[in-house]
Amino acid sequence: MPDIFPVLILNARPAAGKSEILQALTQLPDEVRRRRFHLGPLQVLDDFPLLWSWFEEDRLLEQVFRRPRLHTTPDEYFLHHDFWHLLIRRLCLAYEKLLRDQRQPHTVVLEFSRGKEHGGYRAAYTHLSPPILQQAVCLYVRVSYAESLRKNRQRFDPQRPDSILQHGLSDAKLEQLYHADDWDELTQAHPTWVQFGDHRVPYAVFENEDDVTTPGGAALLARLETCTDKLWQGHLQR
Image 1 (spheres, helix red, strand yellow):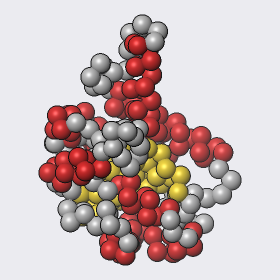
Image 2: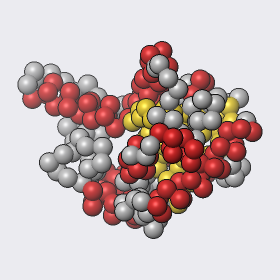
Image 3: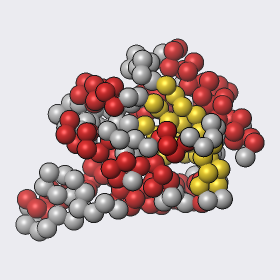
Image 4: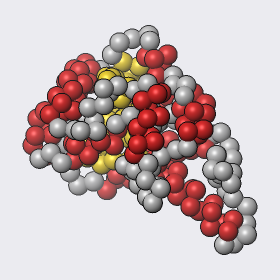
């Protein structure tokens, strides 16, 4: 199926609308998703479940086995700065396994957020593997920090902190980790693509300050279609 994106990288501040976009796409019939958005059946690789498993494992090590925590401090900041990059490498390994095992063409979605405090997107992309970079396109969902903060507070369910759609950060953590965002710096050299070594990655920006992703529906899909049309042109020209 040459008419689908092999890899879509989905970036944004926390609570910007990434998960809602994916939820809307997975509810579409396969033929509609392919025709309108150039997306096949979606295989989503999100670094949040990996990160959350470190939190859970460290709590067990500390509270049950009385052993030192391996990944995080007691207030759940990473022990080592480059663990953010380790998460990207874990996504790359998961991608390799998907390619090994898949029986039909899919679009693999790599979903993650990065703030300047932990290297930003510029650092994160340097840890993506060449097989990903040579065929990926990127969709960035743009919201201000204030909007990220508002939606992060709104979506958080303390009974389901491990939920993709309902997890959240404390205000202090969101401020420290995600207030500063390097997306505009990263993309200022060219309006449609970013260069990483030998690889040119087409990108498009989904503007979501008006929050079309929470209600979903036609407005979300129309805006997304405009973005994926732009990405498809970049994908064909690479």
